[in-house]
Length: 253
Image (tube, rainbow, N blue to C red; front, side, top):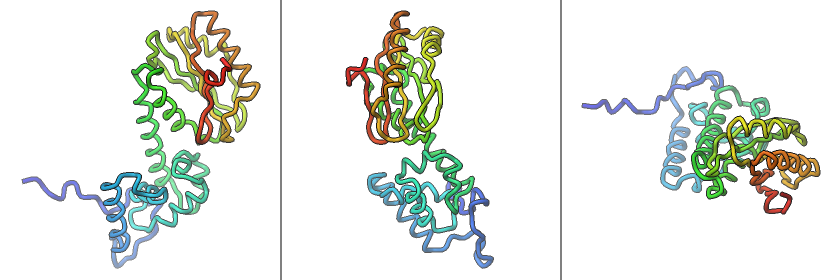
């Protein structure tokens, strides 16, 4: 007969470094008010999904495993006050997360696992599919991966003749308002991958996706070099905090 205890949640902490000392009178035990609150929150999530929970309660769910025996609601509120939203919290850099009192390696690990899972799920929706017919999924992936970064990142989607993704590669990282891009390297990599088309993407940490003149000039240089070799530049997308700009839609290419 199967052991019914086999899959019960282990009440002990996974990472001692982020946990406060437990009373000697009740080693390894959660106070009942914390245990009951966590059960109610999990039940609401299971019955109503993420839409049934505000950001701070979603953060509580993430924090439960890193901090098993402490009320994590104040910490969830502190994270939101510091970073502004659930997405911004899980995307925040390691050093900025650790600057919040009460945050240690275990909490950062939990947050970064959620971020990595979100990136992987979003990317799976564009992999091995014609990009042009999966445009909304591509934009969702770009926002998930880049919208909350605090420095500029430039990446290129390399496509085959059927516009299916061959490679998604980060070409460069820069500062808060600039990223160095070398058109020759972009086109050289396309030839190496035998790509037939490109989509350029970069983010503006300011949140405003309006192209700068240097963005426009760089795009023209890449398009000119690509066209000379029979490679199509489908678009250049700038990702802001909550929206994006398409060079194709704006008539810039």
